[in-house]
Length: 236
Image 1: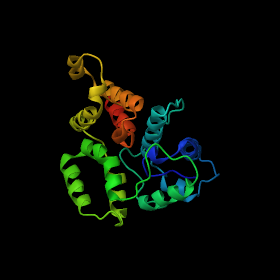
Image 2: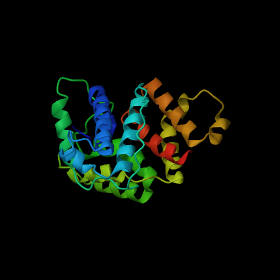
Image 3: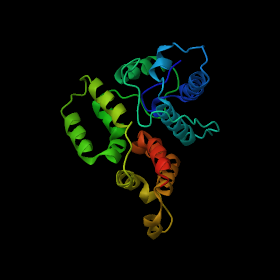
Image 4: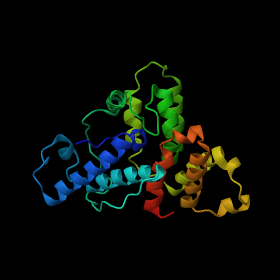
């Protein structure tokens, strides 16, 4: 049983759908007090964290939707709003290495497993921007001082934990506007209509154009699916 802490975009099809099944199994164990896997370290880690399990499920479902799969099995647990597990089975940096070994000679995930701090930062920068522009600037400056072969375990953990916090409406709008800049030249409709779009409509169009034209930067961005979860929460 495994619930990853890395963004689901790093998971290949088999791992993505597999975690989705296992998460539902864990929810059943916790809600119905089943004995199977009840003492498993992964189950214990998520004990009494129904809200976080629900959020992880939403992240999985958003990534599945981006890849063309439909999720018809919502998770309705809400216990301990805002709280996430305070420990890891494996640190996020180690999870990257585990997936790298697992995917040797297999299909990769949507997002390439990062080889260095710069690549991992590029993949997360718009998700961080949605949370905090000052943090976005600080991490960017810090990453510029990390060598391409240096350890980036602290960065991996910081990014995972930053994405557990909710963006503001203004933060979401700012990040989406930056992302829109990568695909706006592909949009063939009336430009005056763009300013009136909801955040949901803007992200939908960004996803559509990114997938259709395989825009390389956004194709490797966690924000391409991740922001949908928080926009949905705020009904924007």
